[in-house]
Image (cartoon, rainbow, N blue to C red; front, side, top):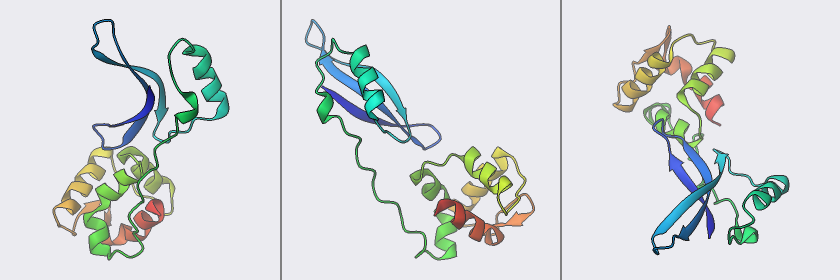
Length: 153
């Protein structure tokens, strides 16, 4: 039987794998990873036909394999700025955005924020404990709210 397995990385993002489950000669359960699907598990017809060709010897019901539905995203438009800032890390992870991607978007966008990966991590941790006076680069958390909302919407 094949299925899509989601694994959480140490950075809090989710990655998908196409996995085949079977039993070995001794009857023990085993799993074989057939394909890495990334953070957006899509099985296009070309990809599926390639997997069928590579793993045709396995008993797999290829027609039943469908990506799992992603849970609905938190509506940030209804959140106050304080709640938004306190939950920034959770919201970023929910959308599959890494710290590096978030930092890069803030650098390239209209915010023109400069700071290292470590600065942004510390910024998120400080906000999470409720200290809304946190800064990253030369910008305060309140100054960054519109830019952060734009990235996460």
